[in-house]
Picture 1 (cartoon, rainbow, N blue to C red):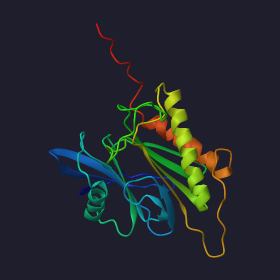
Picture 2: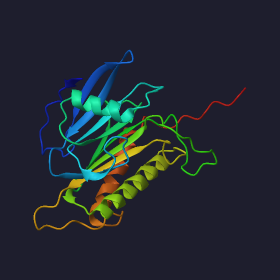
Picture 3: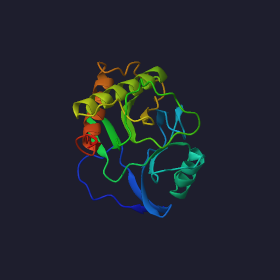
Picture 4: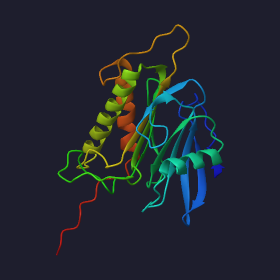
Length: 235
């Protein structure tokens, strides 16, 4: 993949300062966002590559073609990361949505980047039966960086907080859904330093959870493509 350099920017550096990559695949120019976090980060994620909890050095959010049919998404993402020169263990997310204009927000040191496509959306509790096998790529991908250490329990709590903030933003924007069936999230926090502790809470009323919630809420609003379209009624 080739890199597109970000524009020159003044001011304090972002935690989630990423690169925009482009590749030719399936007859299309497809884009990706790569955050090279480097050492010192512990992440929790629902991603197909690098999911779970552990030390991670990068996050890749890769656009794939609509109608994606590969059955090895983790291997696909790992190959894209290697091609971009990402070293060590990382997190890989997929989406069919445009990633070139993500929603961004920061609050009190917490940063959030969201890419969103909501053409296939719904409520989490649905009467429809679940499906086995590899799902289609997620369409609302949320990546959050917290500049302090969190316990593993607080990392899980942060995922809940981010999800609640996402749903709040969707409903406020007029979308009749809690998300898409394959949304993904990644929350990154610092690894505790020698002899240092970690914050034990990240709920929406905790110090860092409140900041995370506001950042995700604003980033989702910024990422949404516009007001929901009402399906046409049959003539």
